[in-house]
Image (cartoon, rainbow, N blue to C red; front, side):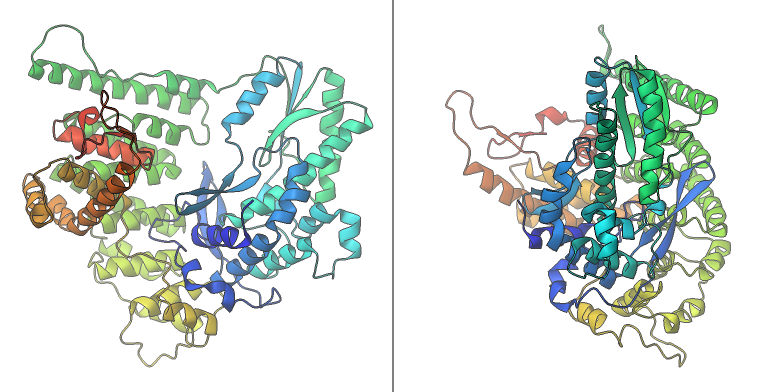
Length: 639
């Protein structure tokens, strides 16, 4: 069982900013500033959430949120103090939940995740559908926005007891309820979409629903079996009348927690049930050809494989677009892009892929994150011609104009982050539009573009005028804090700015050099740096003195001068990664058992799937086989 300190560290370091916000934003420095000593009780002032609009599906959007740092830490503190008690006496009572929050410690990293993956629900469905004839699928309508904060205490302590003791500040449910309301201007309806703490909050309600489901079964003397993943629920019955009765009874029971079923998604199905949607099955079954039989020269083989790949790419996207036009489905295009991205594209085929990816972004803007990440990776591999880059710049500026107009924060922020990494100039029309923004995330990204000289005649006066509006409690705190931290404004034109100077908490964070924004963050470039570091260390002739020379030789082979300018920043990344790898080699060598016949072999599993892909990409670009990519000292890295 983990400790309060470990829960608090994981929540405060990794959970303040949602994944939809660009990677430059994070809260990993909060815990290191020893913030627990700076927190008072939960009766602090209300604070506002920073709204962040994200696409849901089609033209429907939802508001994600970035909490105030002080209020967020208050909630983290309360949750970490009550975690073990709630886990033992509440979470562990559920027979259905797959989303019990757990803390996993991997090396030195602490991560909050769920006890089971979503795939477990499918495996349970296979088992249950072999024993029952009907499945009831339930879905709660607008789950996060519909959660009543007082219901958190009802769920933990029962509704009757919680209402009778609603002013008892010692009750864990009341403490959590209070901290949540403080974080969202005292609002009792809904919990924030985005912070990882909300995963803990929704599960408190979810387990109470599980308990209610079990009680419903007892009313009819039947044992109800099933699964729940967040608010996605499946329960199994042998009689259709029992299934019909249950769905009506469940709807009444949910009203006890001020919740309602989604009538379109809450249905009864007879077995056999469809385990996987047709488009998912078809995407997973598609194979990109990457081998040939017969005797051919290397040049003939490469040319034929390249042509085959082009046909496969076009066939794949034709299949996906056909599915999408027949029955548009949330996440379909993003899933297809992820599947396709596992293949290394020939340079000669990239222009086709880029055009198809642009279509995906136009049709479904939620794909913009993964699309821009792919484009950046191939750009750094010198794939994109100057003509294609000019087309991309024009496309992004047109796209940015649209999303700024409608205050689509997710799409706009992804474009701004990408333009900084790719050194793409924002045109004058969009620069003027950026001057009119007041969302802290957008404003911070804009000021970072200004720092990198990527705006056209930017007038910062409107941003300066936001500073006196900022307080420790309102939505402008993050922008004002980072403006102070990064010294963005040297001339305030005699405007009086109080925050963060008037806040003991935030000034203490400043004195501890805490920032919520990394101005140069670029994970793709870091992965390429890691790959280059591996390539360098695979050469036993290298030493610390000739690393710069090796990097310079690699950069000189690149044809695109814009790419070269980005790579000039990679030397420090490479040197850092080389030192990391050397330490790792020394560490694992001490644990290796030497076999006289087999030699030394050690398995290293510290790379993500994305890291592995870019390593393979980088090495294949140099004409080497990844499987033969050995490190020095006879240590072979298997991923």
